Amino acid sequence: MYTGTNASSRWFSYIGLGIGVLLLLCSVQMFINIQQLLKEGSIRKDGFDFVSITKNITNETMGQPEKNLFHADEIEAVKKQPFIAEVSPLLANDFRVQLSAGNVLPFSTDMFLEALDNDFIDTLPPNFTWKEGEQHIPIILSSDFFEIYNIFAPGQGLPQLSKETAMGIPVQIACYGRDNALTFSGRIVAFSDRVNSVLVPKNFLQWANKTFSQKDRQDASRLFLKLKDVNDPQLIRYLDAQHYVINRDKTLLGRNKIVLQGIFSGLGIFGLLVVILALMLFSFYLQLVVARSRQNLELLLTLGYSPAWLGKNVSNQFVPVYIFIVLTALICTQLMQWAFHRFIMFNRPELSSLINWIVLLLAGVLVLMAIVTNARLVKKLLYRLG
Amino acid sequence: MKLEIKNLLPVYFEEERKSTSEIWGKERSFSNGDLVNIVAPSGTGKTSLIHFLYKMRESYSGSILYDGQPLSQFSKEAIAALRKDHVSIILQDMRLFEEQTILENLEIKRQLNPYHPQERIIEMAKRLGVDHRLNALAKNCSYGEQQRAVIIRALLQPFGVLLMDEPFSHLDHANAQKAIDLILEETAGRKALVLFAELEKATGFPATHLYHL
Image 1 (cartoon, rainbow over the protein chains, first blue to last red):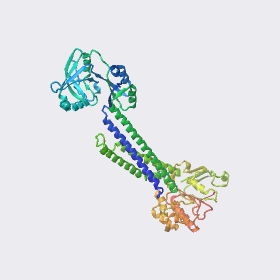
Image 2: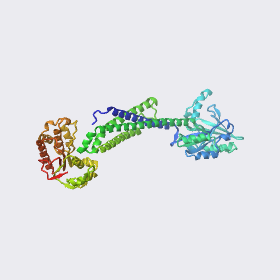
Image 3: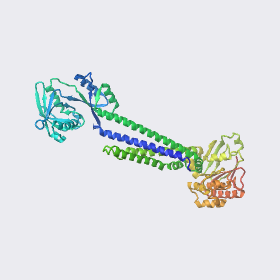
Image 4: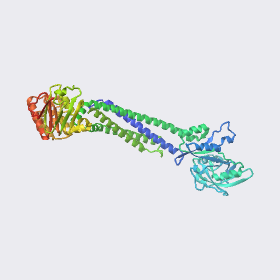
């Protein structure tokens, strides 16, 4: 039917279609890669993001602790925001605390203690409880703090410790009030990656604050937030407006994610446009084919050939071409993903060397879309002839 | 198959044509076995009539019915089925695939709905004296040879109606008679209706009905 007529326009549309499909598939795969990388990168519990916020301490508010604390009404206001799932104030000690390792290690330091609702703790062992009258206090220590200890320990003549050993060492917690003091024995029961603090059970700290400090302090210096999405632009705008400071690392990650996803969304949309453009070019080519074979097609219709059958025959000739193009693009995407995983991401376990099933599905949908639009066009052209 | 025409007139003809014609503006009904000869001098709408009956053009008023079904209501697919199984045609302007051989042209038609085996093509070509041209490209054949190929092509399918528009215009008298004999033989086998439009009254065609257009 098409005896070498206008082969160049056909090849242009094939190549255009191939490039468009490749761009689209690669963008979707990269989009998925970013999702997977950043999902694994942030600390999530039950699909939520946890961050702590403080007030921004400026030259004007320095030395005025009441201005740098969250008051009850402010905490209520934060709770009301729709993008914040839950809020827990970090309660701090309002008395002097000294920590020592007793006779085991010649180590003693002034310390602070904080308490948080149990829901917000990522590594909560069952023995993290305290009852009034108990001498023993469980402690959850920030992994970061523990790391810092191991860095300065050799310089201080102290031994470096593994987490297991540290959990076995009993510590003395001395609490000093204005006219009373008590020493408790403590033990590290867990390490937390999420909370940068020294955590004790909340009821203990409430009791201790009442016992050692006459003031009944309710305000919190830090708020711990449970968020549906740390990258929610609404959240970032709200915090900026209130002059609250959020954990930098996490928003940086979030901001990077937004930029990267933006880039790949843009690339994906561009790929989709190229696909549409190529399909249009292809439809022009088909119209040309039909126009050039008009006489022959008309004669076939005159002889009694059915337009549906003829249309199917004409468009079926392009099915292997479409399958070949999309398959080639799929193989290129697979190669790209393999190289990305192997050479750029150094086989990180969050990613797979194989392309995602969504990309495979998309490739299938593209083939189907090309075939259907093609068949409809040819049928329409033939009906116009007959 | 029953073919009826009711009050038919090309839209580009004046109403007065109805009074002088035995077809235009009249009600006519033809059925199986009828051999209808329509005599039509140039310009009386002979080719228009054949094209209307084959739904190649629809620029007419009135109606055409096949077995009681108005032709205007046939879908594109129904028309294809009608042409494949029930109505065959010999067109004045022949219409062959010029880049194909005569045999290929005939096979394209035969394979659509094989009524005869391939050997029958050769037999019919022999009877009409074109068997030696079967492997020649259509464009290299004379009008006479092309016309005989078109006649054979029309006879390769099953049909209840055969429409013929000046089918022997490029044939001498002897060859025309051979063609008429073959057509009559084939239509008799199918008990088909033949509608034969010619400039003058056809000699050698045993018409059962004769109309002046």
